[in-house]
Image 1 (cartoon, rainbow, N blue to C red):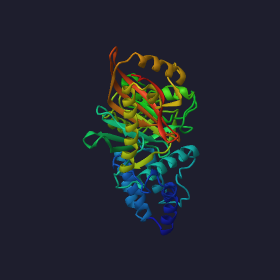
Image 2: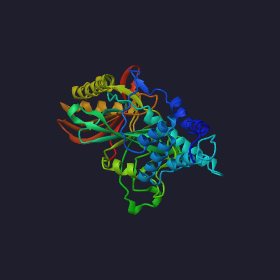
Image 3: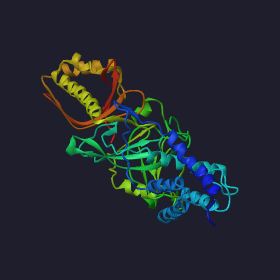
Image 4: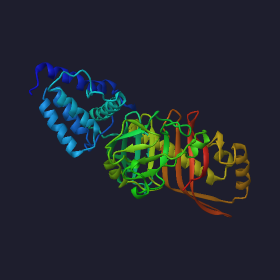
Length: 414
């Protein structure tokens, strides 16, 4: 049966509502020092085909839209959103459509989930830019042996993969992006069982092969180190936050569908897994990514690196008062406050004739959120007249009265 002009209009009104909502909701990204949108998107996954399908609908080319939808299903046979679009396109041949998703007796919550997925995918794809001169604010410095970093935007249901370009001074270079699902009740996890995804700086701690998992986790799982030291200091608890895949009969899940994990389509997880380094790859999860121009990014990290080097130099000077000026009034180790730490350092430095401190494999990862806090780690080679020591150290640096100060210090967890 051929489409009528009236069917065309109703069909477009129903399906393009998704596109219009996506466009209306896609405000500018949080960008420091610029008003341009910074994201460069890859053309992997179903988003390019979805965009072409909705373009065809917008141009009244519904037969072409149906043909493209069937091609999309051939490529992704478990993609439920494409089945919903195909169903609407077929129904439009014989009846007027008023909404997105017109199957009789279809569960409203299932349709709402698919609608949310369509919005998330199209919003991300259609707000892309060809500009590549912006980077996530959190990736201030990656050590040379860390090849990649992951940044997750829960609001956009998107995961971004960046490469550590050591030939360009450690600049993060965009590699790929993927649609993801996260916690049913959103982000900013605080307690066990709250069905939220944590916000913070984490690392992949292990790889769980499919042979040791149930089908629910798809093609594999990568646990994260939640709760980290900062989470514990701030009273957050819980466990079992992973990157993982989807069941074999499911291509993707709605944007908010997990109990706190970050969930990718199996094909995306498999592609991502080839770039993960156990114990090294950071996974930074944010409610909404802040972006910096390259100049602003270089300026921010240079200032912090200068503060770190001054701390090292003042330690070598054996001027304990100068050295302690780098520590916040709220400073705390795992077992000392600032007063106890100060007393110990004065006693130790009194016995030193000379001190040499070398830092290598420096990492600076800014924690998402309103507080200006950076998680700094490095390999420390300490030498003095009566002690030589090598260790991997972790510090938390915060902005205090306009200056960078250390609020936590201790051995880095393996």
